[in-house]
Image (cartoon, rainbow, N blue to C red; front, side):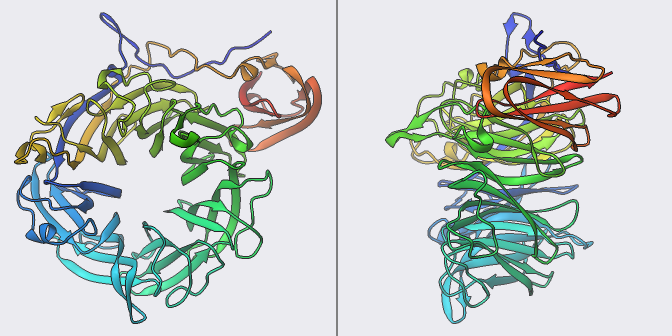
Length: 567
């Protein structure tokens, strides 16, 4: 007998007069900040204090659209300067400041009674007698006053853009970027593109530096401080050989992959894992700690390797290049894959944040350009084929099953999420950017001070900062979400009896040369394994305690996890 999947999370889908996807999110307040040109929030672009909020990004000529904007921003050509906006909790402007910095992150200084902040990014500075674009960190106070500025790198500058920053454990900060050469502050270069990290103390002095790479192309995406000590590093790799301090990802063979690295507190490698697919795009740009493992968030557009059975939504743009889905990768404590899922439609999706919830599920935030597949709530925004995306919020259960989703943005698109702050399981503050509508209102957007409305030529389209506070209003005790469609091969797998006293059987829709079964307890530990050939087999649960287990089943056609209850 086939056992259907059970869902413990419930969601409000019905309202008087029919079904709506808009009931799940309430926008409590919002506002826009910007000038006459392009103002873009970057990376970790928000700090929330008790009495004010800081928003940080880059700006081109903010002008007088929001008032109190320094002339410095208007006088410096190009995008290569930071614009920090200070607002109150009514989203009213208090002040703003500009700095000579292509900013990527704003971080609050720890281990200090003062309200001080690190601005991390890149700028032209003198390194070894050469003025080149390298990593710069500026420390400021809550009045926007610069305390110090430090610059590190080499005479050949970083590759493309600086990656960003993270706090150290001693009140300092580290910055990271990708370099194609060594020298000066960079003690090692292994070849191609390497990731480089430099840590500074609270006075801006270098305390340690490290390079991660091989002779291939190894791009450092993100560094995150671990709750367990040390740092998690997310990299995208096309490794060519064994030279360097990273192991090539050959099992399974992957031409492009997501690499998950754990560093100690001074940059030494503790371990490395590879995930992804063969020859196409699969990248995880952030891994975060969970009590029973990890979750990684990124994008992918393939169906083999760790993406087998993940449910990529096929879609292609000019030249036949595949479009990305959001990719979430759930790992146990031993960094084995528990589940791997794709979310999106036939166009591009991008990942912003994912947060664990008390019930074991997750709330995810990203950007979508699709209006099909998983993206069923975009109809109210009238998205066309070239829309540059809207914000996308969705909730999944502990097994990665989609429960509900909601698009947020303006009609026609051109809305992005950049960073999200979680207040609790229901409330979140989002910061991103949008092209302000002519009257400040369109779709879900309602801003009273859009710089667009101050522009002398109303046809000008400019990006502004966008901040909004939202609440999840779903009543999870009343209504049930329909099951997410599964690939037919996965749906046809039978697991029985369930519940069981001892033996659990697996029946596949087709014969397979090798099928792996793993039984995982709720602490993420693999407690039993078996490999079989043919269409079916069984697993004895032996002396295992009563309770819920996860049964993971993998072969060339299927990759799935089912709950099994031992009575």
